[in-house]
Amino acid sequence: MNRHVMLAIMLFLGTFTVWAEDSIRVSAADLHDLLERVERLEQAQKHTNKLGYDSIDAVSGASKPMPKDTVTDQPPTTNDHQRRFYIGGYGEVTAKHCWFSNSYLRYGKNPEKYANDHFGEFDLPHVVIYLGYDFGRGWSVSTEIEFEHGGTESAVEIEEEEGGEYEAEIERGGEVALEQFWLQKEFNRYAILRAGMQVVPVGALNAHHESTEYFGVYRNEGEFTILPSTWHEVSLTFMGSTPNGWHYQAMFLPGLDSDRFNRKNWIKPGTGSPYEFKLANVFAGAARVDYTGVEGLRLSLSAYCGNSFRNTLSKTNAELDAGAYKDVKGTVTIGSFDFAYKGYGIVARGSATYGHLSDAAAITQYNIGMRKGSVSSKQWVASDALAAGIEIGYDFFSLSPKLTGRNQAFYLFGRYDYYDSMFRYDTKPTDMYAWCGRHRAAVGINYFPIRQIGIKAEFSYGILKPGTRADGTRGKLYNDEPQLAVGIVYAGFYQL
Image 1: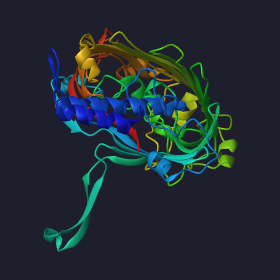
Image 2: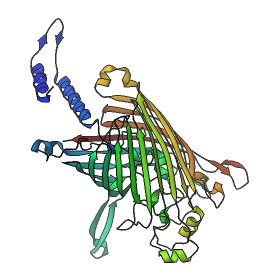
Image 3: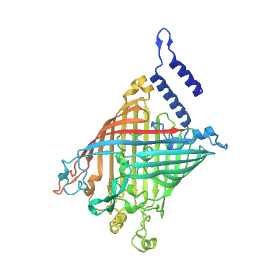
Image 4: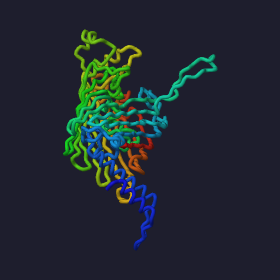
């Protein structure tokens, strides 16, 4: 039915009272709810066939709008222009209190010194603005700007106490990044080419990182620790989907920079670039396959492979070839499986990611030997890292047709993670980095008063690995890490 005709009918019903055996009244609130439902149905119909990793997840509530699947050779009309603009975003407002220390020395030789310490934080982890436009004839553009931790603020002040000297000050920390900017040509649903700054869809978190697509107040610790998040690179991508629920993506991109690998985050710091350009002395490939052919279920495999060692400015290729690092490649190989299920009031999500770095001992030696002031953290790097986790929640509002009809939800959830950024390495006793591996258990709630906004609370407990103490006994080397966190999140994407 035409939306304008439906609107006229609803306005008519809202103006007059219809009396039958029982009186029926259409209140302003009911009318507003009905209009919202019509709008959601329209948007869902328009976006049902969207392609790639910005498409509607078969499980998640949030989705990024994409250009229409049908490629037309006709130029857009004025009305088409009004419906070809896409806007949206996501973000989080969070607060937490931690019953452990945030000192950089807490994993040092005397962890007991920090056993009774605690701290709190208020934060804006991510605030993202999304803009996109469909030019027609299969061409589209998309941009995504991310403000992390409130962005940055700086100012220049005249210091009266210092003779009127001009002084630059940093007022607030944080980051501002162009997380996505790509141009796309869609030939048909099976073949799409995309070039520009794009998300590398390796692991569950990178492919589904909007704040309404996970239960925790913060992004899941395991993948967030060992993989870049959100991982984005200038790249060339071929992607598409089939009518029976297969979605595929293959990406060509520059390799990581092994100069910046470290013990806590493994290869995570090696993405992007500390320079005004991205080094591309070595290259990599990434791929992802999703299957959504079963209602409510998504099964996904993703992988990454590429060299990392020669993406450096510290030495020339000739110097590396003439020295002990001639045959060092630093090949990073990552494999990941993730899934999501939604049905009968239950939402379950899980993932398992394993990564290997060749020549880890040689890269460690090279990084530690870099000069002072270099981009390297000069730390030991693992040859293997892993992360696995699962979360399950039940929507108690699913028991009420009235609340379900209003797109409200109230989940009680539990989550378990295990991850280790120094799972295997070639040098030093493993107990030296026992704090890099841990179990984490969490319980909490997610309340969605409307589909796009969530209110979250969780209590988590990080259990660090045991090791060998100085006296030769086995046991706990570092303090466990309990934490209480709350947050308000949003994610909304609309076609205008």
